Amino acid sequence: MKLRLADLESRSYKHIDTAGYPCLLCGREVNEAKAVWVFLCDGGSHITDDPESEEGDAGFMGAYPIGPCCHRKNRKVLAPFVEAGKVVTR
Ligand SMILES: [Zn+2]
Image 1 (tube, rainbow, N blue to C red):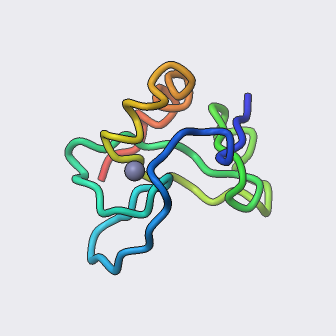
Image 2: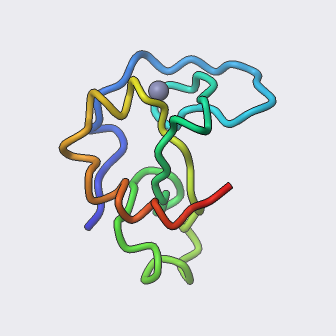
């Protein structure tokens, strides 16, 4: 299953220069201890809950974090993707 990033709720995207990871949805720095991770594919336009089948694809981009406030706004729809991202450890 894939989900278009553009269909998710978020605060307006704001790029902030940060030493850490920016939130995939809003660009703000995330606290990695509180972030959830999802797998990006199709060149960054979609997230997938099946990274294994995407891994050989040129558009597969690996795991990216989503901060707590964006996760909260999309908790239900993100659930299967967050579950797939639990294999990520940093
Ligand atoms: Zn965010």
